[in-house]
Image (cartoon, rainbow, N blue to C red; front, side):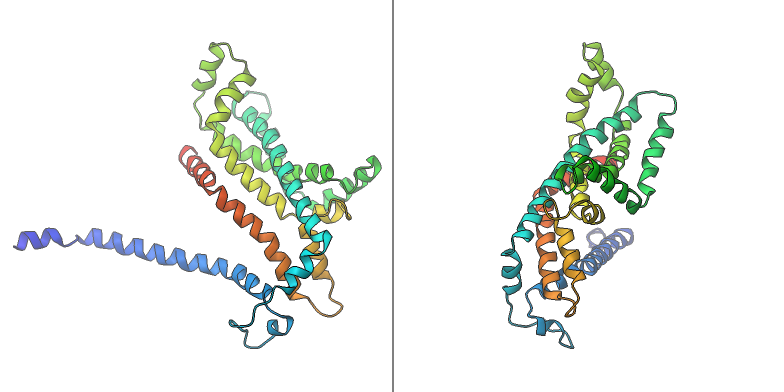
Length: 289
């Protein structure tokens, strides 16, 4: 009876592991709530009337309204800017993944004198203040007649996305065995053929996760869009900045939170739709890296 009771009871080490896992779960939930609370408050405020926003103490229970959403969705520039943001984010994401993946593969596999130094210099280019690049880009785009164009904004975003993609994919390619390409080249593939037929399919989870992060970074970028666009290619972050800057009658928090929610919701939906590939890419990167 004593032996059976001893076996049935968890050992002290097992008890500590169970208690530690419970503590980690509780800590994870609390940290998640801490980071999600500003988003929750933004969405909640977007359904309030202006008079309810400034009540003290703040109201959690109120009569919701969608008047602010209807007002700003009826404005053509908000819908158009949302479409522009999708076009620019998708274009910059795909262009940067194509160029950055090939550059990362070259740094990982091809032995060239000074290749590592060249890669470090590209990475250090991300440390350049964006405002130092935005003004020269605007002058060049205006000179070429490309100001306020989607392609100009896509190329501008690639200046900070390509180094990001290149170094992420380089670490992924380094972890892959060289025998994969060597076997393909022995069978008659060229270097390009081995890359596109062997390496790209194997690296698809990493490519997809990097593409997702790149598109999210392009989605939320403000400075280049503010400097390089006027009306035709203007994006949704510029609209939010315009609402925030219009403080003649005080900040229009209802409009800010409503447009902010419109901006955040597509990203959340997109992340939920691609979470399978995103988690797989992160897990493969952690395992192989």
